[in-house]
Image (cartoon, rainbow, N blue to C red; front, side, top):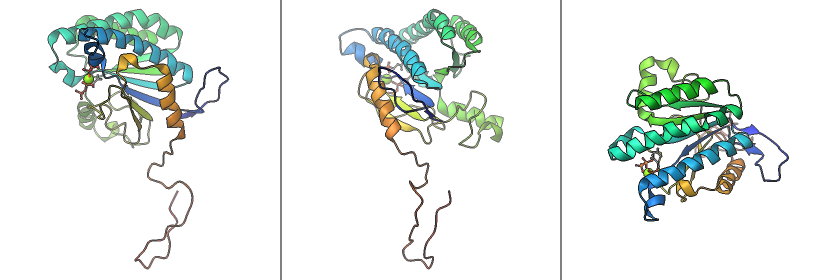
Length: 255
Ligand code: IPE
Ligand code: IPE
Ligand code: MG
């Protein structure tokens, strides 16, 4: 759930910070090809943006940040690109570990691990174990992730794994509800990301390619989030509803 935070800062910090932010980091390839460069360069630049986002969100007081790094459908890409991405994850995990620990950031990877290269699986295990005590922000990175598969798994476990929609839940098959979902790269779709968790998420689709995402643009999205009226199906203020064509003169909605 969003948190109210008021901080003294030279920069504008929104009064209401989304508690759980999810980001579909899209547009790395287009960033590169539009500059006549190979796609892998876009992924390298995207990894720098990831670092900036993690620091920025932790500073703003976001308590949960979930990043979509590799979907289960991304296996359809050329072998070389997939291999490059996994090597990049592993090297960044190792390089960022000290900084994550220092800043109190807990890291978890969500998605399948059985198809990942062994060195990456090991780097993940080390990073998760060494950051487990982080209390400031929970960073989840989705790798070989499919929301539909996660929901199937939760259903196979039984109804206990599919909690009431407003419950923050345990385990990592289904995550706590997302407050704000951001997608860069210009597409307006979810691409099998957090379908259950985004039931009442506010959505922000940005045309900027992920490597070019500036933190000022993220601030603008957060500022817009702070202004949104999240009604969850209710009405904004107590009022009487007239229902035309019925004998019921009025109904006062339950709260
Ligand atoms: C997102 O950027 C990164 C991954 C999916 C791994 P893309 O690689 O999808 O970039 P575009 O959409 O082709 O530009
Ligand atoms: C979604 O981006 C997956 C990630 C950002 C990791 P894609 O580029 O794979 O999505 P589509 O193919 O445009 O839907
Ligand atoms: Mg893409």
